[in-house]
Image 1 (spheres, rainbow, N blue to C red):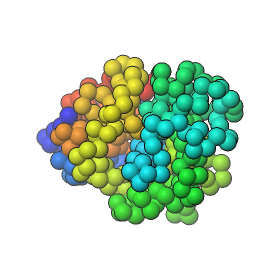
Image 2 (image 1 turned 90 degrees about the vertical axis):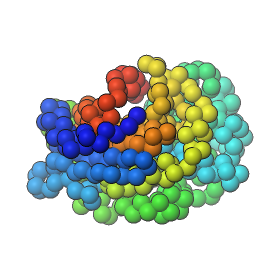
Image 3 (image 1 turned 60 degrees about the vertical axis):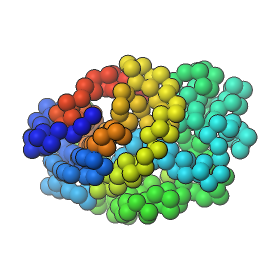
Length: 326
């Protein structure tokens, strides 16, 4: 996949047309070529009640784009010998398991990152197990939160502290946060439902209880933040091979690697926290990629419209897989 440079001139117009069609009030996007951002756009409104436009300082809930960032942290911890990808997580911590099903005893970090634990996305504890770990695909935020608990126990540090030290500070992600911070009271975009009706202003991530960080969904970012993470990934030649070491079939020709969806040459992920929708993809060979954040419940349609325009790539199978995943 390549970003078509001639399409960059009309990317904003295509985005505006799709935003109007899908009742998406605001959008921020970043386009990368050869591993570096070449264009950033902020369009529409973050809060029309205050006549506040989307800007480079507007925060979005990255939602499940948190998961690839957490996966990168897990790789760092594996390299440091803190845990192993293929060791059963119950060997590290056997208390507070998310399920009573004895088959879960074989679940590993690799199973979590490739959505192969058998755990559902969310639900009341104890959770049912749909299949033995390593024998199927089921998108699971609850698997990520359990791996987070293992990581925190092994390191003796809370996830937000780990992410700040290992990623956000080194990569210069100055406005990113894994928990609610005071600036978010002023800078977090408002959201719209699928009928185009503004929702109540959020005071924390949709699923968050209190101020606890969550590896599955609680990352807050501006459009300037996540591209710094992508730039780092694209500068690491071995990263894509590491992600692709696992290919768990997820339907519609999509497989799931370690922390990322895989489709043809692409690594990709989507985010869905209700009124916040986002999409990221990149090609490790061309080192081209894109990132889009929106604040409307229909925002994924706009993400796919803009991504297809800028790349000429067919995202229909990815969209179909996403539609059936949550």
